[in-house]
Figure 1 (cartoon, rainbow, N blue to C red):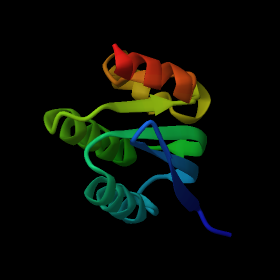
Figure 2 (figure 1 turned 90 degrees about the vertical axis):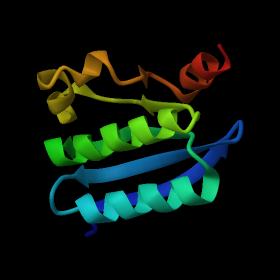
Figure 3 (figure 1 turned 180 degrees about the horizontal axis):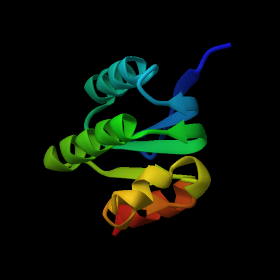
Length: 115
C-alpha cells in the first residue's frame, strides 16, 4: 500500500492538489517533487487539500511553508483546505495555524482569493 497519493484538479484557474496519506520523512521527496512539478506546470497559485492526510510532520510542514512563500512571493494565491487538528497538530504546536491561510472548503478559499 502506498503511503502517499496525490492528484490534481483545477478550480477557477488554480491547481488544487488532493493529498491522501502520510506526509513525513518517508514521503517528503515525493511530496516535494509533486508540488514543484505542479507549480512549474500551472503557475504559482495552489490549494492543498489536506482532508485525506492521516499524519503531517514538521518536515512536510516546512515544505508547505516553502510553497506558501513561493506562491505568494510570485503573486499567486495559496491556501490549505480541510485541515484536521488530530492529524496536523504540528501546525498548532508551531503557531503556523495562525499564519497559514486555512479554510474549511475549496469554495471558502476561492472566495477569499476573490477579495
